[in-house]
Image 1 (tube, rainbow, N blue to C red):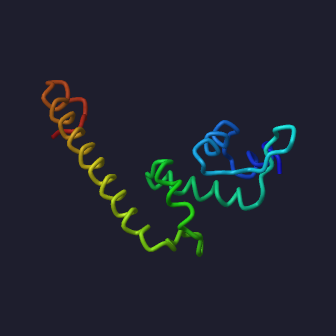
Image 2 (image 1 turned 120 degrees about the vertical axis):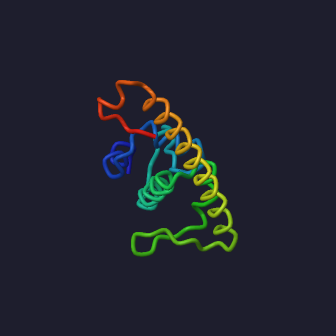
Length: 126
């Protein structure tokens, strides 16, 4: 299938599909004219990439993870022995980011609630 059909099938823009290719996440066939030709497996790959991006992984990490996951009942299942350790490290990175964001939010809530108008405007308190 050509780029337009791939966009329709995946809901992913042409620009993003080209980015995935640059990152080594997709490898469509190229016609002599330079046009990309995608296959059904590429639709599945884009779906996996989107799932992993939603999970908070970077495209660098996804490039390592993609060859080591399979879909089973609409879930991604690791099939490489070292993948689980990599995913645990990524989970810890995400947890640290969440903790930092929660600390930032708490600090902002504290500053906001110190303003005299905050109490009457229904703004969150610390």
